[in-house]
Amino acid sequence: MTGKGKTVHGEAANAGHRVLAPDDAEVEAYLETALHAPGPQRAATDRPAGGGDGTVVVLDFGSQFAQLIARRVRELNVYSELLPHDTPMAEIERRGASAIILSGGPNSVYDVGAPKPDPAVWSGRLPVLGICYGAQLMASELGGHVQANGKREYGPATVTIGTEDGLFAGLDRTQPVWMSHGDSITTLPEGFHATAQTDSSPFAGLNDESRNLYGIQFHPEVAHTPHGKDVLRNFVVGIAGVTPSWTPAHFITATVDEIRRRVDDHARAVGSDGKVICALSGGVDSAVAAALVHRAVGDRLTCIYVDHGLMRKRESELLRATFAENLGMRLVMVDARERFLARLAGVVDPEQKRRIIGDEFIRVFEEEAEKLGQIDFLTQGTLYPDVIESATSETKTAQKIKTHHNVGGLPADLRFKLIEPLRYLFKDEVRAVGIELGLPEQMVQRQPFPGPGLAIRIIGEVTAERLDTLREADWIVIDEIKGAGLYRNVWQSFAILTPIHSVGVMGDGRTYANVVAIRAVTSDDGMTADWAKLPYEVLGKISSRIVNEVPGVNRVVYDISSKPPATIEWE
Ligand code: XMP
Image (tube, rainbow, N blue to C red; front, side, top):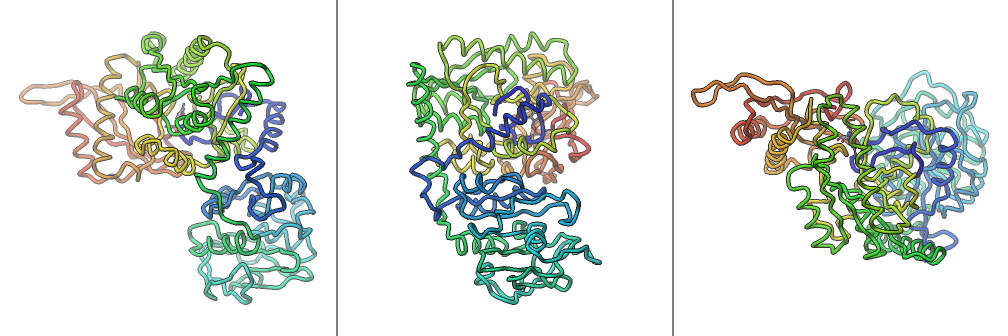
């Protein structure tokens, strides 16, 4: 991702946050690259001409589940991409599509300006599955009729399969499904047949098998449709004939080849050594991105780890052991602790802290990169949700809640070409690739950690002493959460050092010491979150250990706020 207006997330799956609002030219330029960038499996050897193994393109009509459709297809080991609803058919074919899925969406097909696909989608050249709004579009665009339903169908329903077409092959005749629609198909287009119905939808399933067009009113992508994945498999594998071969190992081979080719071509063209750098944060994304690039270019990659002193306990050791010692990568570890502390002295405002840390990080990184001579490429751990989000410009006006600093998200004016090997992957896929690459489980399964580190978990001024206090408390939280087997059940779990002092009694004496807060949340993507209902015993153990083992703390409280209205981090 390029441009100062890029979305800056990755390490923490923190979709929705950006540094600066992008201007239109940047958005256009970005869309251009997002649409035309070669995908990971687009290496020549990897894409048999004329279909067979191929991509499933999901056209996004604005459904909140559009991403989920692509993920479900990928769970079938078939590569799937989410593209804007009006992507031209020529582009869909250029991307090697073997099938098209039309997502649901909030509009009515008869609305003025309702989003529609390129009419060539209906040509029968590729099999099409319309879901909900997508099915209604199929009906209305091809001569049928759709109208508002007197009765909204929302939530669980039972469909009865009338005709067992390829889509419903092997399924029982009645299926629990999940519905969410106000409009219904009332007349089928010529050549179409009804294949399934519910009490309120006579056309809950429709097809024209001669043209390879299939529609369903229910949502197969959600967990509440238990056999939804079978329906998707029937479409992708059975009807479209795609061979499921999208696996982490396959992705690694194709991506490593692609990176090597790109770096070599560039180096030859400009007569350079083809050097690559990567900022390592300790997070999963930069780790996996670096490991992939390392496999492609070996010692031409140098990783830079800036220790800003705001890291968790033993972070630097873990990084050195993993990357330098185990994987044999070139790793520059920069001790910038004093620099950051000096700049943070006296600062209490959260946004000011974030800005200082972001700026200083870039400065240190640039200084180190400079020392390495000519660098051609910068590796970033951009993930697919970031790419999708940047391509859907409607969401770009969101009010800024926090200025995110992300270790991978360095500004484009550093003048490197970008290598973004994860730009087509979801977080869970990144983890699977990390495991396949041989990264330690401990590194791959880490909870997200924010770029500005512990500084935004110390409310008030950040000092060396307060950092030590928080680091110890944080270590105990993670230790106990792991000990209880809960580490992977929660999205994040950590300690916050509050600016509050409270009175306590230890032994026979009065204390007046720090209050530490504990935060543990469950979440799917960090955008919304609920406080984790941790067992009292675990909370009790965390509390007594912190008070006993961390000097200067005499009270522990548990944060029971969800997001919204709170955010996950306190600052
Ligand atoms: P909030 O606090 O906004 O956090 O609810 C959502 C997710 O984002 C992480 N976070 C960050 N990640 N740089 C990052 O890389 C940042 O500046 C940053 N701020 C918050 C947070 O830990 C949570 O996972």
